Amino acid sequence: MKLSSEAVIFEQDGHLAVITLNRPKAMNSINPPLGNALREALEEVRDNDSIWVAILTGAGDRAFSAGADLKWRSENEDEVKTPDAGTGGKILSTEFGCWKPVIAAVNGYAVGGGLELAIACDLIVAAESAQFGLPEPRRGLMADAGGVHGLFRQLPIKLAMEMILTGQFIGAQRAADIGLVNWVASDDDLMASARELADSIMECSPKAVQAAKQAVALGSELTFEEAMVTEFSMFSQLKESNDFIEGPRAFSEKRAPKWEGE
Image 1 (cartoon, rainbow, N blue to C red):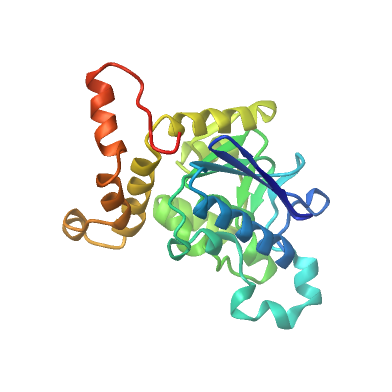
Image 2 (cartoon, one colour):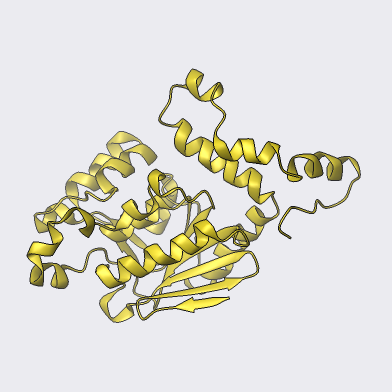
């Protein structure tokens, strides 16, 4: 299956979807056509049972995404004040309900809305040349699509505040050292490394993975005690599936499991 638009390329390879932001001349900056196409691609990931994992990356070698398209923004000031104008982390919010794992493969700059989009993903693989930052204060703006509220939930508060308040960028290795990035790969090996991580996830039951992701996302809004006594919908579906039986059975029979949907 292969779907594409001018702004976003969507490809499916088996159970893996690869979504590529496709405005390389504009450093994959986010304007409404790209934001709408990205939402459509992620809806396909969310709703297509044959897709188990997605990788999100940017075309070219300069940027994963340089964030909001400020040129477009300056030319459309009335539109950007409307509630639906935001993109970035809002697309992959809990309310969106995508329980499939999404891996950000970050090449070049992931700044502003680009960083918001990356941290909204479940995992980040970064090229050695990658740069991360929230430069909004240097433009008289605030990272209000998940940057300010998302970063301090993923990093120690002092490290998050340094990035939020200074607007300065950090490199891939620094991002890995502070826990923002899972893996650092050479620029040439970025997509191979992201696919390796995706393959590792796809060895697991897709229903179990989705149940776990949903439990983390929704359980984080509860106390530990509340989360422990709450049965979320994806776990209920897992218990009713053949995967719930197949996993222990395959282990006892010393063979690879055959998950539903294979």
